Each structure stands twice: as C-alpha cells, then as structure tokens.
Image 1: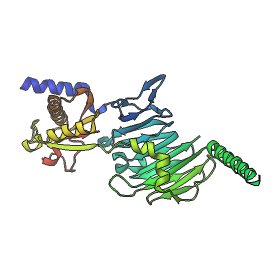
Image 2 (image 1 turned 30 degrees about the horizontal axis):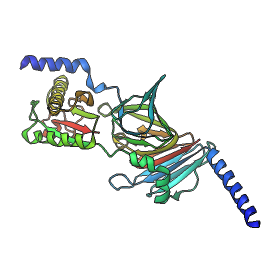
Image 3 (image 1 turned 120 degrees about the vertical axis):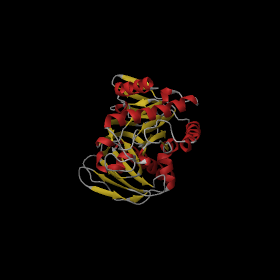
Image 4 (image 1 turned 120 degrees about the horizontal axis):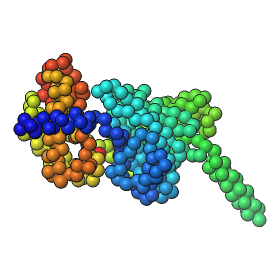
Length: 144
Length: 203
C-alpha cells in the first residue's frame, strides 16, 4: 500500500497535471468543419481537443459547438471562422485571460467561469469592434 | 406596361441593396437570456463609440471600422432564428458538474459520494460526452506538497472508478489542485469537509 502511494505521488510530480495544454474541445459538429493549427487543417470531430491559436472554420453547410475549459460555450453557424487567440485559466494562481476573435459568420456565446471571476479578463473581438461582457449569452454576426 | 417597368425598377433597387448590404463589412450583436433565464449585459465598442445592451433580444450593428455602433434595436424571434438558427441549434448545453467528498487523508470517496458515480456515468451517456474533467482538491490542513499528492490520488481514484464503468481514459483530463482552490475559503491548516472533494465536469 505504501509503495502504491509513493508510486502515485511519483506520477503526480512527473506529469504536473494542472498544466494540461488543451483549452477545450469540440462538443458537436454538423457538415464539414475544420480546426486549422499552423499549417495543418484537421477535420473537426466531436471530442477533438482545442489549443491556443487554433482557427475554427465551418463549411457552407457546416456548424460546430465547442466548450472551453472554463465552461465558455461557443457555437458557429455555416461559413464561419474564428480564432482562439488566448486562453489562460488558472484561477488558483489568479492567472486568467481569454481572447476570441470572430472573423466571419454567425456565432452564439455563453460566458463561463472566467467571466464570473474577472469579466475584464475576457476579450471578444470582431473586425468592427469589441464586446465587454457581464456574464451572459449573446449572438454575433460578422459580414465581410 | 407601367406595372412591368415598376417591377423592374423595384428589382434593380432590391438587387443593389442586397449587393451593398452584402458587401459592406459589419458586425451585429444580439443579447439573449442566459440558459438560467437571467438577462446579462454586453457593452459593444467600436473605434468611435459604445452601446450597451441589457434587455433580451436587444441588438446593435457596427457598420465598417470607422463608425460608432448604431442605435439599439430589438430583434424579433423570427429574425433571430432565420439569421442564427443553425448556430443556436448546435449550441451545446452547459456542462454538468458533480462533487464527491472524502474523509481526512482518505482517497476513497465517502459512501454517500460513491452513488454519484452512477449519476456521472448516466450524464456521460446522456450527453455522449467525450470530454470529462476530474479535478482533485484537499482542505488546507497539512503541507502544500502533501496535499498536491493527496488531491492527485483522489482524482486518480475517481478516474479508476469511471474507467471501471467503461469510460475510456482518453476522454478524461485529470488535474490536481491541492489546497489552492477551496470551495469554501478558510485560513491555512483548517480541516473543512466541503473542501476535501473531487469535482467531475461532464462536457
């Protein structure tokens, strides 16, 4: 039992699990949609993990819903594109920061824990303006 | 004859309007009630000005980069659904959260918390979840390092319980917070049953 505990502690120190690198995942997809990560274009599937700097794109018949680590919920209608530019969520160290950029198409947004703890840490941009939120659900449409 | 000419003019106007509207870059924002029914607030700012939305279905448009946000209007349900229907249809429902509690220094959930495992499995199936977080915590009694190890062991124990019920480990992200993230803030070195917990989030 003691060895077992020590082994677990060893793993605890090894993996430093708080620093998981993904910032959320795709909850559901309809029609064609992609994650663009650097040079890579990955077909979006339910369960796929998202990283900072990922661009999410839906085709003309596509739609996609994502949930971020702080429970922010974002969904995208057809022909839409957005970038997850920044996401830091370490409430115990008071490290919070999030920037989503909505480039074109239609979106829904339900703010998560980060907006509850510190609304100023959450930044939302479109080419025409920025949105400051006080804990809420809203829609964005961006036309090029 | 006159009728036909009028129709042509009308069509031309329509097409031109559509083209202009379609070409001009703009952003539209609409406030909706939260999933729990409460209406929050958003503040929309361009390079030239600001508008605040604080009533359900209020909307504002910014046309181009060099303009201030237009006047606040109300968008009717029909328009909301015709413009945002696809995005609203696929909008994920909020994640479900569970808490399991532990006796001091124990890594085995209390008996009354063990029944939560069944509810967690049901939620995973119901939501067809592919993203489950297990976050281990302790109260503030004891050294920080010891508590990190303890909260990690608690989280791992819960992970094993879920895996035993058939949940794939690839769907699970486990984190350990030690005493740094209490549910109920206390002074250091205070035993607090509500802080000796593992939080499971089913997304």
